[in-house]
Image (cartoon, rainbow, N blue to C red):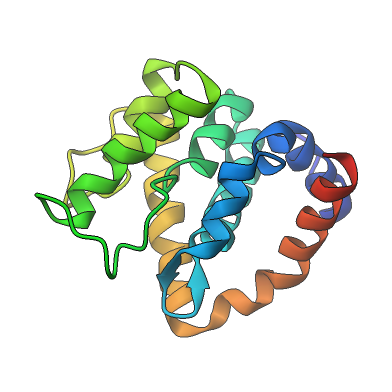
Length: 168
């Protein structure tokens, strides 16, 4: 498969998740801290962009996989201050699925599995290739967030946001 350039990847990624990125509830994710100084929105875009590139290169259903990846942390609360009956690591994937279906309609079984299992090894092992890719990318991006290295994704993130605001 021909390797896409950065600009083409951004254009295709935005076309895949444009409706999600322009939705007010997804934009609301910018209000919730996630890893250190990184908010949930930035982290979710970062993860889903990596997932997009990998799943597209592997010839998978990259559209469904990328959309689930963008919504993997769509829980809409500050986990540092808002507590539930169970730990955030186990609670938030279920809340992300509930919110995704509330605002965007029924998820496929694969998309649900991806979101519900992305916290492996704290959650069940992913059963799908998309779930495995999401889990690996989430761990990688979380480490980049916590070490400050996700700053190198910032120019791509800014271009994605600019495109989504101009098209949304």
